[in-house]
Length: 350
Ligand code: 2NL
Image (cartoon, rainbow, N blue to C red; front, side, top):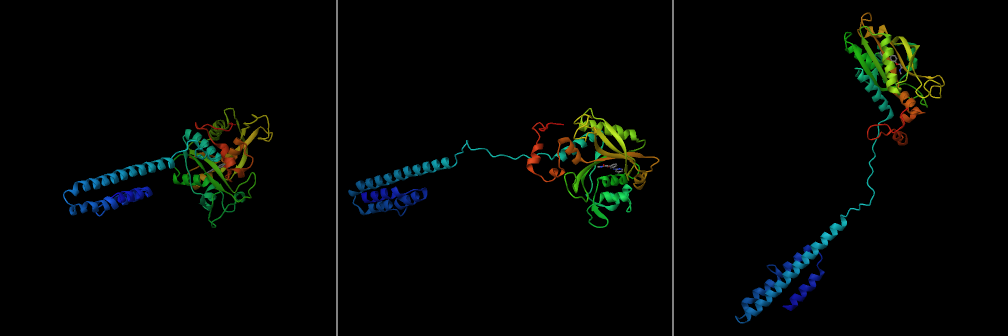
């Protein structure tokens, strides 16, 4: 019997996990286990021998039971220790950095301009970048033979389908949809395309914002007042505007709109090329042909329209010297336009 105990003790020493411990316990105390076998021997003993024998077997069983439980506790404690060790968090490790993006300078300019015009009661309208010759050119008083088309060569999908060269087709479609009766007061921002060789000041893809107001009794003075407010809102309260005669096929009369230089306040510097003025918009009174084509009677309705390039506005406002910076997505460039948490600008506002 002590040989069995010795064997058990030796086996127990080699046990390392809960499963082999359980196997060992079964080998000794299970139904067909060694200790159970000893118990069965009892019936072959005489009445005198039985109590002493029984006591010994009981002691052996208790020894095994206690040893197994002790070992089980040991194994569980070791497993817990192991888990605690492997799941430790090293609070001195550096945290993960989150790269928070920032709004593109062009989007910011567009939103600023939209906000201003929304405040004046304009609606924002967007349309197709892939357009028809009719809405991009014809409806804007640019018939197929018109020489002004040369300056707006673009990417053609077919003879009649092209990438729009300005956002004017959005306006032409809205005019047509309003059926020649309702008033119109819209702002149309978006991407436009031209056939061009890219360099510091040219890009084959850029952005435009156009505005259009149609109603009864709209005059040049309405255009002038609107654009003066616009200049002050976007470039500073002291700005003034200057109109110079110009030509666009879709407006008559047409004007170029300059604003007084926000850098030198009109004295003359490199931004305004020493003139004190910066050209920022083209505008005019909507051509009677454009009104007629959309179904409006030019004797009853009149309106003004204007167009400008957010790319150019962003370049002037933030001192960006090459338009390609706006389209090549170099993070060293983009990250300069991060905004602070309160939404304020981190760059010195001009
Ligand atoms: C510029 C000049 C301009 C318009 C755009 C327009 C649209 C309709 C009717 C009449 Cl539907 N005009 N748009 C008018 C004058 C100038 O843009 O320099 N853009 C960058």
